[in-house]
Length: 114
Length: 111
Figure (cartoon, rainbow over the protein chains, first blue to last red):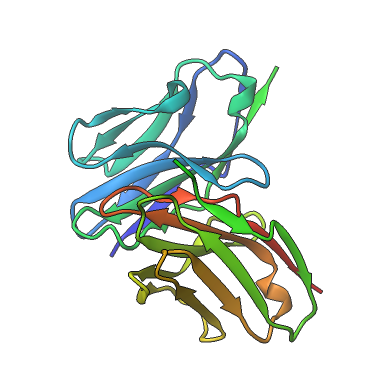
């Protein structure tokens, strides 16, 4: 079975400081993992994906995530937050053998203070 | 490259009515899936269509049904609407082992 736990429902940072959004997963099979971002009243935009290649994955807008199998984690980071990063972020897992079922975490709302 | 488009963007229905939501998949994508996102929650998988056949379904009752057409566009139909059906409905498409590409959703309000 697959599942995703996003450890923080809300994260607040100041502009220019680092961002850390935490995600732990559970998967019976080798997972593929994704981070999506959702701005208010919009669909979800893919930030980055891990599909069993390099464990450090770079995405758009300066975000990156590291796959740590021993910790079953896939945390999202960014060195310096920008006001435009304020949004909701979803961690998603799917079995690498079957890209037909995607399991979403409950989301983390990122607030960026000026 | 045309992205995923959904229509309408907003819809208001009365309890007990039926609704049809539409989705055009991204060019080259043959798989479409639908998600329900209630306020303050993550998206919940409703079902997925591949080459006009349903090939996966989440924990939703049969009054949620769908279609996929030969051009890979899709419809989501919900019968006997309930107040709890109020949500953002997201359509996503993909081709092969690509990630999901989402539309901007349809906001359904049931009164």
